[in-house]
Length: 136
Image 1 (spheres, helix red, strand yellow):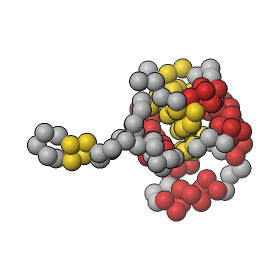
Image 2 (tube, one colour):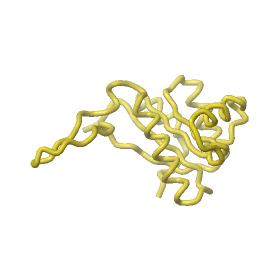
Image 3 (cartoon, helix red, strand yellow):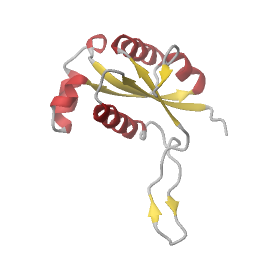
């Protein structure tokens, strides 16, 4: 099935493996609130156990260096796409209030990005992620 929308997570390549996984999880949780349609319906196994719903479409994870992340962020901002971000400073905070304050203290073009997640029409997300390679 081909979707009209696309979910993309972009992770900075120089992070430790645990950081890449942690940032991907945090960013994905942010996108889960982009629209009501992004998440599907709950699952249930044959024994009647219920499981939480997940994204209704694949999540493509890209790798980028710092410059490419900054460029991708600017592209997403100009298109007004729903976006989640993770900055380097968030590795040093330990609560949600400090996380928000840390991001709020920095102008958009000065953010030290380690990851982004973007959701929107496929054609727009493709333009935002143009030139990036899939993480592998």
